[in-house]
Amino acid sequence: MKKSELKEFLDEKVILYNNPKFIESDPIQIPHLFSIKEDIEIAGFLTATISWGNRKMIIKNASKMMGLLDNSPYDFVLNHSEKELKSLENFVHRTFNSVDLQQFISSLKHIYTQHKGLENVLKVDEKETDYKNSIHHFKEVFFEIPHQQRTQKHVSDPLKNSAAKRINMFLRWMVRNDNFGVDFGIWKTHKAANLSCPLDVHSGNVARKLKLLLRKQNDWKALSELDNNLRKLDKKDPVKYDFALFGLGVFEKF
Image (cartoon, rainbow, N blue to C red; front, side, top):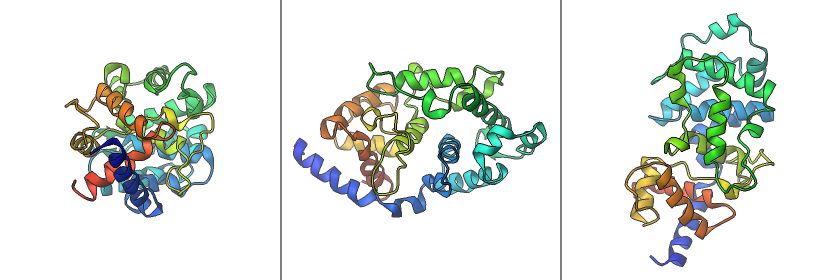
């Protein structure tokens, strides 16, 4: 396909999938339960963190997690007692267990009380064009309080060549304003132009079939290659094509 044909093809798929119907089967429905900015952020971050595996199970467990946080995630993060933190002890989603959830709640409290919140900690430096260093910095801040070593694996680090799929998905949700009511666009100090595609098996395979990606592994180097090609199609909103790649892979078995 020529570049113009590829753009037209993918733009059509974006229109097809980037609409409110998408929310019904996607984990993004969990932060959509809330209206307060900080509730949306925290619900989104925790949901994105456990977004691997079966999508129905992700949604079920994310919903269970919100229930454990009294369906007021921001209030719980800021004001929980030790007893309330202990009440999370039975939570598990695959390898993310109650120890990890308790640590995430403590680290989020640290971020909101000492670092002005998630939006501030993940901000991209003016000289940079992607979230590589911001995500690395975020991980450092997240674990600067006492923590168990095991929990570190649940926050990816692009400087170790991770594609950081889940954090990139969370960033898309928060930063991108799609005017269709799917992505939230509530982080006004961030730019959609800096976002990277959440690279997983589905989007990676479709990107390779469309020659948007040649690298075999789904790592940060592959993500940079994909970024570069998607920005040629739309430099202001490259990550809208996540809807096209994901939809082609999951719904159309492209």
